[in-house]
Image (cartoon, rainbow, N blue to C red; front, side):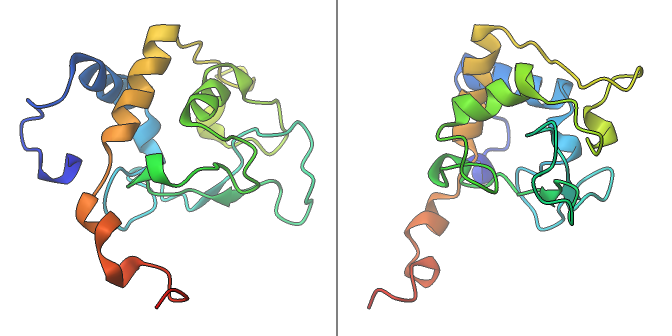
Amino acid sequence: DVLSRNDFNDMTKSEKEGMKLFKDAHCDRCHLVTGAIPSQYYGLRFANIGLDEKDKDQGISGMFKIPRLMNIAHTAPYMHDGRFKTLEEVVEHYSNGIKDNPNLNFILKNYDNTPMRFSFTAQQKADLVAFLKTIQDKDMLTDKKYSSPFIP
């Protein structure tokens, strides 16, 4: 479990590279790996991440809650509407798919106000996904107190 790792020596090379890329690409500005605070740096709780060029719900300007990433490999589908079925699709969105939405959060804009394109290589995408899959708390996943209240 990521929570119990102090030195990360048990991570694979790919997982370590993904963790480094996660930090270098500043993904941790909005997404906490663990903890209860929605954002480490900017105090964001909601953001428009350029899912669409034009917001379908004008009332919220395409902004949705920024999730913690704990157990993210177990929570598919992704995004508020489930449009991404895999973590690979999520990473691809941030790599090349951020739309030029007028309400796009400033963190995902370049200095010229255009959407960022991280343009991750295939290996970098695989490394990010490998790292994301390490973010889990197995005790939480198996603890009955977190199971469905509808299952006896």
